[in-house]
View (cartoon, rainbow, N blue to C red):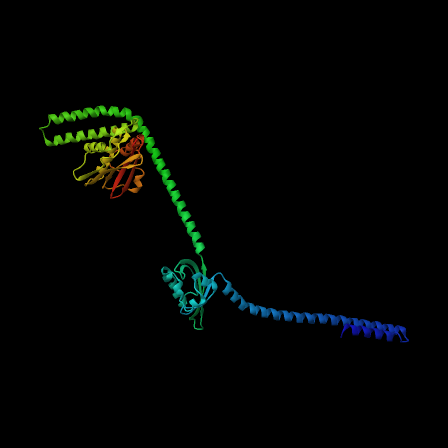
Length: 440
């Protein structure tokens, strides 16, 4: 009943009650009716509010249920169509049924081209066996899904890295009915990983190189300290040793003359004695030469004549073939001839020692700017790569005999004459030492 009608009725009832003779009784009845009507109004209003709320809530719940039902389907469509991850549905033979735009973009195919293609065609040939093992386990229900980082191939034949997730839908008998594939392109991630690996490898190499340099510097420092000590003693000891060595050499010569007709074994012993004295003299000379190299005098030096003299003074075994390719018109150099002659004598001697079973000893020269480069090449045993950097260090030697001063002395003399000495070698194939000297 509308509230307006109730108000009118109340007014009429009150008006009629005022006409009752017994005023007190009329007033009581009037107040009672007014209170009753007021209570009814309140109950009506409250009931109306509750019913309205229930109706409104019911409508809202019904609408939300409809929206929720609609979104479940809509959500899948949005995820499938708009996902940046490639999604594809395969049948039990792994042929494509449908694929989203991201999947098409990854492999460069149009939607109509993908129909019926087998998923194996998208996998890099080198990775197919690994992925096939997982698929076999999936078919045999050993696993329900798998994730693998793999290489894939697009339509143009270009390979890229992807993160593959595969799941299955089975029928009531547990057999594979369909597969869903999700593929993420991780080429950028792989590129970052490779850059990081390259940086790590370079860092490790740098650390290793620096460590080797520290070891080499330490070894060089030790050699220099030893050399300094040797230098201090060389002068005095050298002279002290030469006197008895000279006496021994003279005595050996005298004995050889006196006992020339005696037992052959005695002659051999005397020859050995003479050779060892000469060897000792050579060691002492090397020590003295290294510790007191004199300043180089600049004079014109003909390379062709210098090399001929060096070859004439060198002991070269008959099984070694000497190839002299020094041009007749090679320019002269301005150096200390005696000092440079000693360098080439050392280099030729080393080349001969590197060919104990014979080989080729080749000498050649060429002009290189303001310098003349003279090379001595052998076909001997060669030098290990790890030893090449140490060749010119004092007291380093790969030979069983010797102090390791020959090449160090040769380098020191060459540099004192304004030149440089370098080496190229291949173990088992031979070595080439090149001396570059100034033309003026």
